[in-house]
Length: 153
Image (cartoon, rainbow, N blue to C red; front, side):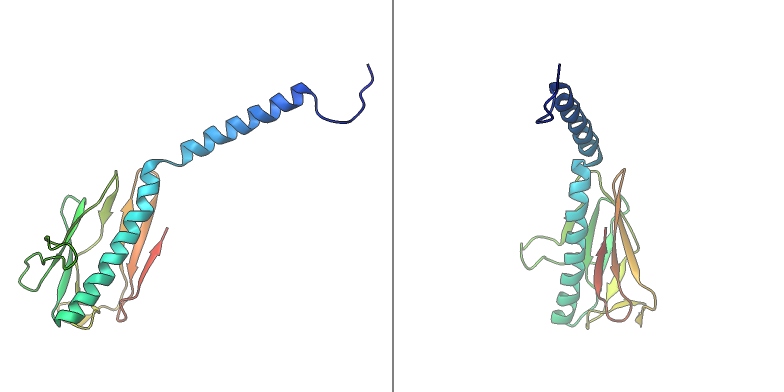
């Protein structure tokens, strides 16, 4: 039988479809719900740090980002170590970390100018918070002196 050279055989089409199916299964296994939540949690933490800086400047007082010992939530506390009221929701400023994500990092104080401090002295090294799932991690960094916040996937 002579082949005309125009088009593909049924066997070639089946092999291509099978290959695409295998690649899609591999890609689906690499992307899980936890990984999708990780990015939003990192952005949320960065946003919270920026809000703490703004609130510290607005109130003219020191505020602290306090990480719970269970690594599943964080709080915003005032100089008397009381959880402040979130001006947006009117509820205590507590943020629960969603999904199978955990948070590690040190508590950080921000002075009345929104700068990261420790014991009244400006920090000289960046503060890093690491959010992690079973397969990935993301870092939220607060720069010394300026308090500039960045998120690294």
